[in-house]
Image (cartoon, rainbow, N blue to C red):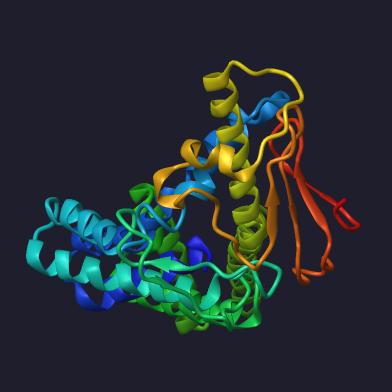
Length: 328
């Protein structure tokens, strides 16, 4: 789900289970910090600018580095060191961390039905077991929107009651202003002031809510834009590993020309966990091609509206491109 949804959900849990502001904010952080492993996308964007061959940190580490049990324990234990009730914050941190995993498990799919995000519970040390739900909701699905709106309204009610809100996780001064606006709105309505004042205050609050919903929508859109197809991303990663193995083979054999390379040639130059060749995702076939050519993959069955026989190929900047038609 969206990081904003994780924020609302974690803060609601924290607000209902802690008795002081510091612990409440620490527990909330435990529910949103797992997505820090996706910040590699910033490095990827910088390194790939200007046509350069960029890094692939987002696809290598997002949902792997901090979305496993080890990440949950590390985050919860680190935050508990700053808490007033350390044991409670540690246990609540683990709870909201697993709530984060549950939300991602049911509602983080990309645009296509094949773009399912898996959970590697024992990552980053191993990818076994890999849990995924084939009926996972799309990131912008109506279920996620309804859940987010409910959590948002619930958060506002708790903020008025407690005197602090999820905004305080990031900025204490802004939180006081935000809660002050909410409480003034409630007090003004309760006192039933003049109609003009009530209408003006209601419009101000409506504007505030509208701005938050707009920011929420823009975040959804940005997050969805970055969330490329998980399946095609894995295919692209396989092609990049083949390309890297070709370069290593060429260096070892002092070759630079259009030499034919086959699967057996690259077996010793691929990462050890691949057991000599990249893992097929849906029965597709990978072809190393010549040393001076980009590796290709051919679909053997339909995938995300691409018919069987469609060819995927890496461009000169190591990005994935699609060529319609059968391989030959």
